Length: 92
Image (tube, rainbow, N blue to C red):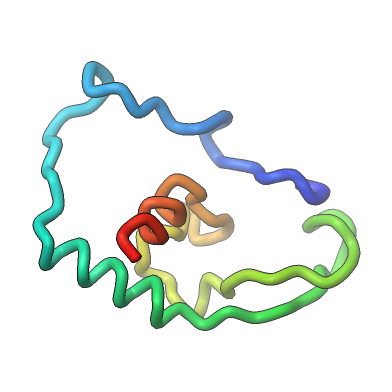
């Protein structure tokens, strides 16, 4: 925290084929759906209520409760899944 990206499982996710199963490559239609979800996400500026949540000052991002089911939200619904978020942006 404190202004540094934090993920629930440590560093960036392992992305090698040998660590994965049930691999499904998205169709053009599925990619278009993800792009539409990314474009529909509401962006907001905000300040954290406490330094315990992050760096002081104004931030830009999305509010999880506005888009709770997108792949950019971690399973805990408390943090952003940065790999999922980047992948959604790649779809756009």
